[in-house]
Image (tube, rainbow, N blue to C red; front, top):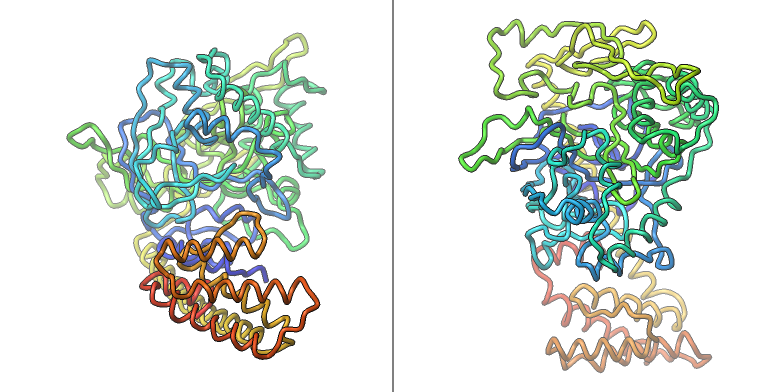
Length: 595
């Protein structure tokens, strides 16, 4: 019911990574912020990205889709109008984009650090946006002209080339503990740069205005109060009394103790709010569930936050280095992930991980996938993963904040050690007597999943191909009807409107706010620049006649209309069509539906 031409284009852009039909991807863990519409997610073993990078520590988060508005069970990007954007010009004068903010702050505050360089090839992942580490310099992507990546004013960066390179800073190079990294950067004093610092201040103000809206949810209020009383030991929260690390740890442990990670949580019932249902009834889900609730809770604790989808790569996945000490990693669909990110003033945006089992880990990877260097000795070990019970998290040691003592100003932190670690499939941890279940994936199931994925993809191709043909047929018939039916005035205006559409196909257009007569003058000038001199008078005639039809009470005669229509056919078939070939002609036929 929500299908549109944009969905159609997006489906084509994702054809090799599992079809993104009606905005819901059939494989992987990300779907453009749409929540609770599918019963679960599955993987077909496809390669989403290939990355070449120097060695890094901890988990490498590759940010893709970014959204800050939660509404109607989905996340969409923040919309920015011209009056609200008071920072882009300052950043541009400083030769950076707003997305370069965290890179620039680190570079200015830690001048002795050397950035790393990552090369990315986008294969099965969505082709709509760039995937990049945090603290990346997006504005220097190694491409030029139409292949250079393009930022939105806010949120994600649009992908223009499926191969690109970026400079970024590995946070582990900074000596402070990773958990305290954003706050550590914020305390440093940067070198003075008037435009950039003015832009940083303006952007921080913008972020606090746009990323602090909280969903109206009774269950969200209950979760907030439980974290206050049980994990921070207070009844009233004062932001200045706590560090971001303490707040994020409390939220993380609330999820670990009370919720279950699973790849098949079921759909959100019709009429139910996604957050309410997850927190109050469902109490299980995968990454996008925890990222959504976590982002909202961060806002309740006074931190601007937003929702992110992308991919995560463990440092253990690096395998053996190449000759030049770089590592090439095939990032599979199992590495698809969603997380929250937090904005720390004077530091920028940083990942906030709340999904149980993802602390420098990925519960969807087998042990062999987590560490390619590890050699599996027996088939029985590979084919029979053990079902385990875990307390408070998956794998390793999980930090749990205990109830704050009455005579203490800060909650104490203890360590709760897991009795076992589940390294295969979608492990689920215990918190109130719940038992974890690991998914048993055999080679036959993998083959079956791949066959089903191929079948779904082929079916989707056929369905979308049919949709393209029908859509084009409808649009072409509509154009012919507007040109053939109605009074002379409306038909004349239609001729002018469609002429502009055709000319735009070959770059003859002007987006400035000018009158129609001025526009026609500009179009004729562009025709002359392109050495299309014989037809410029036709464009001017159609424009002047359309102004006469739209702005005056003058009668448009049959002869005038016929002349305009004949000129229109010449523009369409003699000027535009010969200059269209290959992809441009397909675009004109099946996207713009003009031929």
